[in-house]
Length: 60
Ligand SMILES: [Zn+2]
Image (cartoon, rainbow, N blue to C red):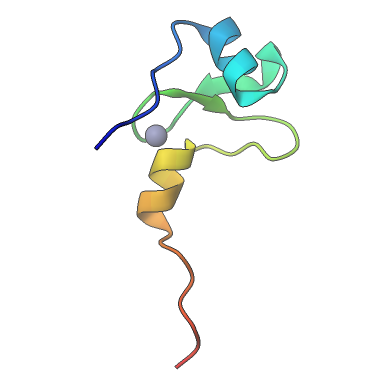
């Protein structure tokens, strides 16, 4: 499974995530760079969010 290249530093991560460098932080789960602060930010990176919260299912 191909995964996106890990950004080298917070500046590269900010460019990749299209956010400000001071919104970048480490994912609480895998410590990858992610947008942690500000609008749309969160403690987990997109990959971990996906693992923890699978696509919503239809109501039973
Ligand atoms: Zn993560």
